[in-house]
Amino acid sequence: RSIVKFLFQASLLGVWRITAKSASPIRAQHTNNHAIIVSTSRYYHNYRHVGNALSIYHHLKTFGNYPDSNIVLMLADEILCNARNPIRNELYTDDAKRENLCTSDIEVDYRGDDVTVDNFVRVLLGRHPPHTPSNRKLHLNAESNVIVYLTGHGGDNFLKFQDVEELMSNDVYGVFRQMHWLNRYSGMLAIVDTCQAHTLWDVLLESDTSDVPNLVAMGSSLKDQNSYGHHGDQTTVGVSVVDRFTYNFVELLNQAARRKRKLSLAKAVEECCPYRKLHSTAGIGSTKGGFKAEDVQVSEFFANKRHTTKIERPAVLLSNYAESDHIDSTRINVINQNRLIHQVLNLNGKVTSSNTTDTTQDNVKQPPYEALDSEWKARCLLAILIGA
Image (cartoon, rainbow, N blue to C red; front, side, top):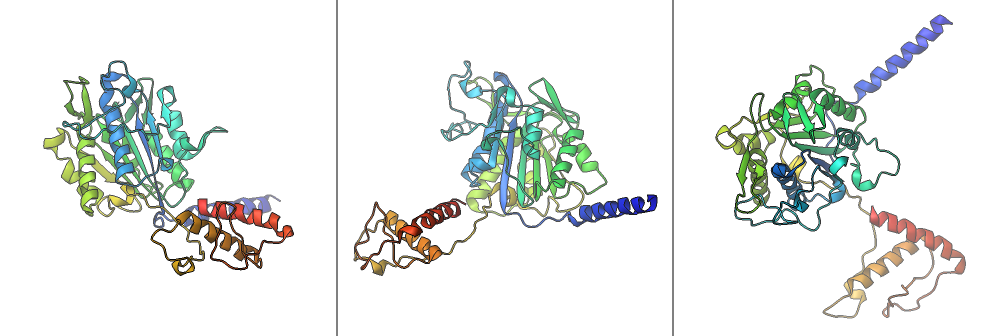
């Protein structure tokens, strides 16, 4: 019996090893993009950290075509509503105040005391308490490219969350490794803008194993270096509004998007973040296994790639209608749906919507009563397919 038990355990171990090795470090091409953006600092004098976070958020929505369902935004303080802020619900990171980053469509998913290390980890791993709203989750899979952006106050191998708790470099390595095991990403771009920022990735980048492949990590400063504010609005808000690294990086991203320029992540950091602009040295590195920063295009992370499924449906020819300069598109869509339903049900005859009447169709027949239940089910199925 002991021999049989040993062989059984050995076979299980062999299966586990084969399964683990079968997950190749080179992932398939991604089909969707997601981002988590975190500002970890409270209090009005940390205004610039909110400016950093909203700069990235605004770029992803404006140029990256990211929907809010693909972004989790975490802001530790309500700077925009702070009593010391003379321009409520407005935030500008440029001197000329040309573009307000606080628009009406901003969705803050975690704020105040909800911005914690625990919630940050839960979002990445998808381990939420029951009844957690969908907007507080990232719906990741093995084909997702993920941006993790962090800004706040940090030091050697740590990032502070609201002066209460810390995220350590060992924690980051453990979380990202679990994401790989859980097939929660295809590629990942991790960015941090703090003092001694790049040290947060030390354990991750120094690992000799390839258990966190396809990951590029960036930091605004190296060990024993500070991260500085770019400029302050002394006449209005009275504090710095954005940090140098994030300001220059987003400016380059905006220019590249407008000009449709191809740019690698390594080239982007080299161009936008020289020492003379930051007064610190920006760091960038790649984990073992998978792609390198020199080979990855900025657009692979900052331009959302939506996966769509083509549904064949009959087209309505304009010749079916009386010649007119204006054709009701809603009416055409309703008729398209009715025709598709009857193709599914194989009903003899056509259905006209209760809200529209197709006067050009002759011999319009109503479906038999026994088919109404099946037709209702087909309409529900069609609504799900269209929504997907």
